[in-house]
Length: 263
Image (tube, rainbow, N blue to C red; front, side):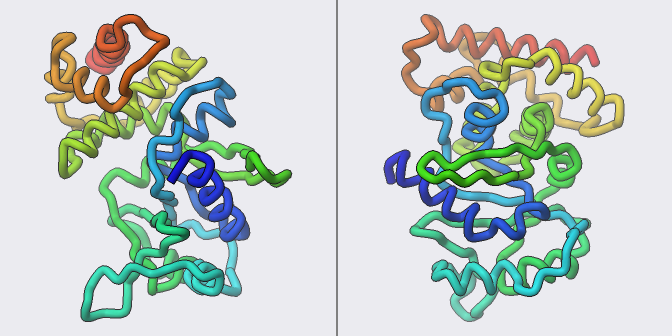
């Protein structure tokens, strides 16, 4: 799919579930697109880094919905991918070949969530994910081809960055680790309020979040040729705006590393 098609599907999904948006938090690879276009309002090339559309769900559901999300999306023709051949449910829903997935944390009251989502939808549980749901911001975003605005919840950019730092090492493969590191670099490079982001990260640490995060983060950025720099350089691709991309990556992560080590 080209960029225009991906954006159209994304906004179509928002329209399809607009009634539920107050109780959902957009997460994952769409954050660079949301931050750059609607929060920071900076022009960033290639800010769409994924096609998957992921929503976080907490147990603090604010409304009693007459229909579940499964019932609503099924009535709109969403396709289903069955996770087990011998069972009808749970399923992952697809809009024009793009998965729309839902994520929560292990200790959640799953029954409360299922009242909104429906028992038929696969709900992924991820450790430390509740942190993103607690530290979020509401952003007005507008579809490019429609005069329609949506108010969505998403993690604060500081929370997104800090959570990636604490969890990327736990990812099951190098490809996902590389994407997480690239998301971190995206925030470090393009956020216009990076000093405020550092202040907010300091507050998260004061509040005790991720005190036991892996120390081997540092080995990824010991030198300019370390694994982390190389992974991000590959994810970023050729960059006409920076003469020495790897040096830029290294310097930004050195500052982050020193800040985290000294807090």
